[in-house]
Length: 338
Image (cartoon, rainbow, N blue to C red; front, side):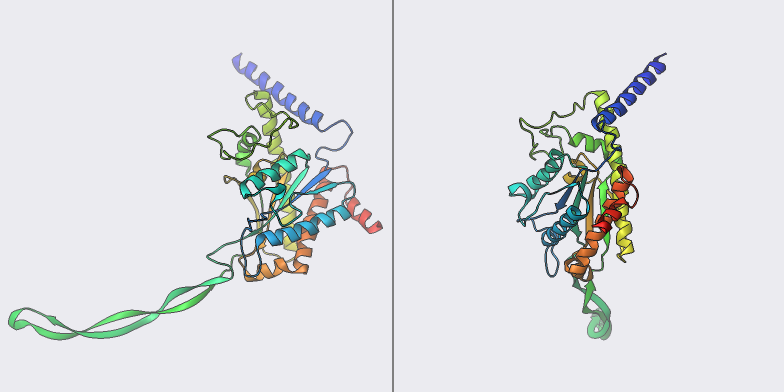
């Protein structure tokens, strides 16, 4: 009997969850997940330059690509609101530090009811961009010295051979390269839920960050309410599926462009606020390794930036056709007609 009661409660909660989801998606007949607003985020900015290459910085590249991507989206995704978190070289929201700026990025996306969040970044690896020198053993040199052995009358001098390593400065190229697209880890969905509540808590990973509240802020979900918590977890799971779908499309297009793809990666590190705290499908695109000479040259070139923009834009179009009431190829047809 007890087991039946528990199952009945879970069933009611689950039905209530899906009813709540349907209600929040509106009654206009739009397919679940219809995309009305896309947030384009240029990573870093201001005094936070991000990773540094031989010629430029991550903040400079992300701004250039983000501006081009937003412009292309406004031109080709008619009827969809395209918003930028950082349209200038400064940190977004007039912030003075990167922690507050990251909080602003997520709050900006949530306040504007974003349906997709796309954050642009550049990867880095190794000791320094381009490469570095190391001491490498290239052989051994034989040396002799005279030593005294034995004691008393048996003492005598003999020659002994010893060896000394020969070193050479060898250039090590910074070879790490390629693209990666990150999403919030599915195994950490509960952390995504927790990040949506008030974080003025000493045990919170984001203690001391701004909560972004205020009189006009929507009421925060009551995570102590079992029904609300189940609904939020379902939302988080839904975000994961859609985030993965978009991320996979982006990486697929990068491969078609001849880029080396390191695939879709799941991130659950502390501090990845733009993935954890955005209430929508969210991806973070590592467009290449600025620490790699070839990747950096590609990232700063007009041709490279155009290819990156087209790859992401094409992925977004396919995503919209999949999750909205848009017939396959309809967006392409509209663009051709114009």
